[in-house]
Image (cartoon, rainbow over all chains, first blue to last red; front, side, top):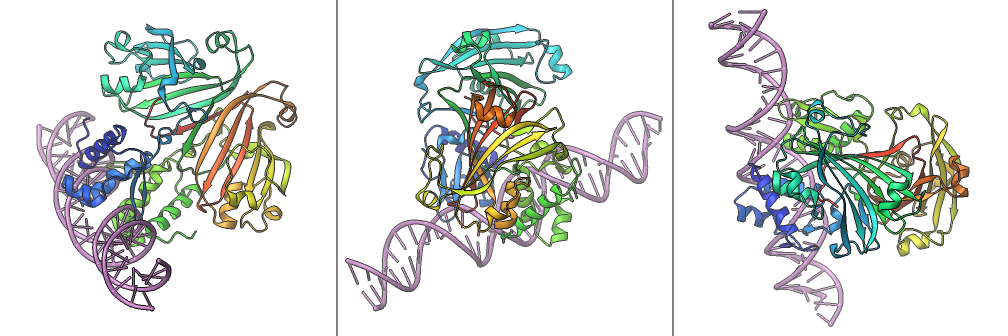
Length: 242
Length: 242
DNA sequence: AAAATAAACTTGTACGTACAAGTTGAGTTT
DNA sequence: AAACTCAACTTGTACGTACAAGTTTATTTT
């Protein structure tokens, strides 16, 4: 964590503590004044850290009350799988390997435009299927430019979290995302991996993830079977209607 | 606009001016100091307004440079239709009425849980089809609890923006949203309104909009034909992988 | 016992200062 | 002409004060 400023240090500390259940969901963080005193910071600085936690969905602030740790539904401005209330516990979720990490040239038809740097680097590719209660629900193909990611192919295991691995191994954090979504009919590839009949409607999602390394983007294509589980998300603010 | 605080007034003014192209895309807003002087406010207050514009995606702030008005792709943490680059101009978009606004009891099977207040009030319903270049792409059914929305049924015209109407007529602003997404096969209803063949894959989206009236939520179900146009969105921050 | 009041908390708004750090352009030097 | 320097901008960080406004708890009054 190379964030040097005071409010970022506090932000990261609190975020880590929230994720580590030091402050469980529904609990109230120490008051702004307490945090000031404990960290020897001014209230403006503390408020800046809390404000970031709020806009990122970790806490809700209530006037007169305090800063309350939000439920896990914070997570995602992007879409996440979302069962009837299950799905929260990871025990019911499993990962199947379809393609172990490997080097390859970029696919001929790639849904996103690549920079010259990315083109020249070639790509690392892997594919996996996510299952909930043994039912495959998502087929995910990931493409990463081969830029300063030493030992990726050997070290990354498909059953771990891709983003957590990038963060731990390369201090790479995801800062944003673009995605496009279609409804498509399952073809032979999908019938195989997702165990659905041909022409079953599937969600197809193309994603481009932005990272804290300005020239490194991650790309993935997802196919989701929504027969049993829907994709869902929650967003705090929006600005315009369609 | 009943926002009483200084920074909210400034925020709303700037937002309105951005949307009205007083500050077109790519242009730079007056500097913080200029805004301070013009509105007779402190820099902290001005920065609070700008900060809100930034988190909502209207501007990007660059140190040493200024506050730059972002491209339209700001819009939506929620999904919006998104053609190849067209679609930005509203001239190519048209609306067809399927069901004019009317009072009715809530549907038997409703995808979201309703509060007692909402249940008792009954609902207002309308449905419309959105077309791009005469091609129907979205079939939208909307349900609104009949709570303090006088003259809605008579005054709301289907070809105007629903959210803009609510804002102008009732000072009702949308503050958040939940949605669930599926891929489904078109049935007879959809083939009719969206002019697609039976079993064409469609996106189905159920949405619950939260508003600044704490007990008033809006509900809609969307069916989208993504053969020609994808749905897309951009999000600034995310916190967790799937 | 119940209700009203007050005190002690909480976060929200608004003001101010000071300096750090990135960007730009005019001016000077080479 | 090119390179450098510097002043004048810009936003970012961090400190401080004061009061408003919502929540909770303890106290007092009824």
